[in-house]
Every structure is written in C-alpha cells, then in structure tokens.
Amino acid sequence: MIDSTAVIHPSSIVEEGTIIGAGVQIGPFCTVGANVSIGEGTVLKSHVVVNGHTSIGKDNTIYQFASIGEANQDLKYAGEPTWVEIGNRNRIRESVTIHRGTSQAEGLTKVGSDNLLMVNAHVAHDCVVGNYCILANNATLAGHVSVDDHAIIGGMTAVHQFCVIGAHVMVGGCSGVAQDVPPYVIAQGNHATPFGVNLVGLKRRGFSKEALHAITAAYKLLYRSGKTLDEAKSEIAEIAKAHPEVQPFYDFFARSTRGLIR
Image 1 (tube, rainbow, N blue to C red):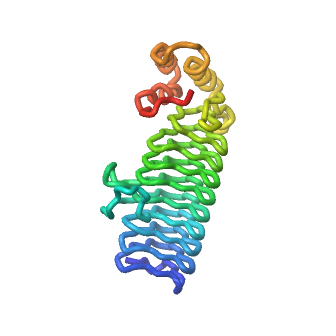
Image 2 (cartoon, rainbow, N blue to C red):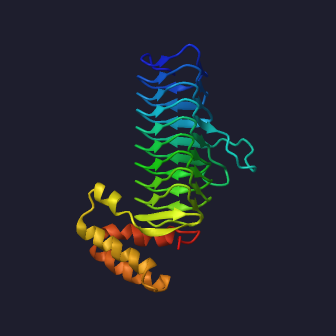
Image 3 (tube, rainbow, N blue to C red):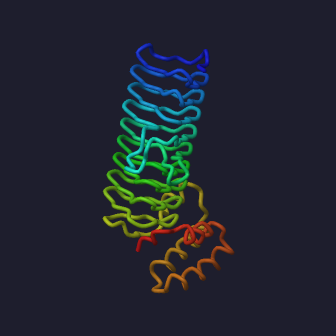
C-alpha cells in the first residue's frame, strides 16, 4: 500500500506489498522490498536498498548507498524470516549497513529514535541501539551488541560481539571494545580502557552538580579505590539510594556478561 502523497522516483523499484506512509520521498535508483514498511515523512535520498522484514518509522533521512535489512553475515543464517526495526527521526548517512537479526537470538536488529549513524557505520545482526546515539564514521558493531541511550561511538571503532555500551558513554575513535563499558564512562584504546567520567556530555544533558559528584564517586569506587568488585558494588549501591542517577551504574553489573573494561 502506497499513500497517495508519497513521491517515488520512476527509476526506483518498490515491490508489491510494501507499505509507504504519507509524505515519504524515495529518490532515484532505490530498491524497497515487499516486506518493508516506511513511516510518514521519511526520505530515501538515492541508491538506498531496504530489504527483508524491515520497519522504518517516521521522519528518518537515509542517504545514498545505505543498505538496511539485508541478510546478515552470520554463517549459520539460512534465510529464516528475521527483522529490522528502526524508530523515528534518525539520520542514516552514506553507505551505512544495518543487517537483519538471526534465529539464534530474538531475530531482531533494532535502532531507536533520534540517532545519527555517520558514513559507513555498521550495525550487525541482533544489535540493539537506543535513542540519541551517535555512531561516527566507520564505527562497527559486531553481532548482539547493545548500545544504550546517548552513547557516542567514535570513528573507526570496533565493538566486539555481545558487548554492552552503557548510557552516556563516550568511546574514543580508533578503539577496540572487547568488554562492557559502564554508563557515563569515557573509554579509549585497543583494547579500550576507562579514562574517567563523561562530565562534559552529562553537563550538556542537564545532570546536576550533585549527580555528577555522585557518579564520579561511584566511578572512583569501581576504578580507583583498589577495592574488589563486590566491595565496590555494595558501596555503589549505597550511593544509588541517595542519588538515583547512580542506579543505572549499579544495575549495569547485572547486565554485563563479558566483564567490565578495566
């Protein structure tokens, strides 16, 4: 079903069964598969391929040569119906690739809303990217990676499969992330190690001085105190009782499966 207000360039191929919302613009030489839905106001600039069972929300802008919903690169994948979901108001720049999920997981690759995926960024199968995230040029997420809200992944950075990147994290460019990065942390290097709290980012997002002091105290307990992880966790839990901004930092311990960067 194609809304009457959608504008589709005659050189583009839109297969029967596609759902195209109001005001969608599909530029020249795009290919849109039969199991795709595109929400109102979304723009495909040109030479964009959207394939597979893919749902794209409202007011996204997708630039030339991006490939979304294509078969993933997992050698175990045998063509099962799996999915890609993309939210609203994302900017997906040139040559970005977002691959569909696998049946070995939940079958879903998901990108939230208000993200910027810069040139040549890659989101592999079964990844979950939150909201207000930035993946800079050539940032690469391997399969099953989770990136929480407001995280920034620097250019030329690779994230190992199954890693979790916490909220408000800043990962510097040219890094190799092989373990989980707790919320609020600056990470850099190959392999990435912690370099303090992302204070500049947190100030920009309106965190109070009291919250920043509490987060910094939790960070120091984990990384500077010389305490064991269990000892640090119990003290961080106490800080979180008085400062709810620290709770995501504490909760992250239960989410981590690859161990924390050290």
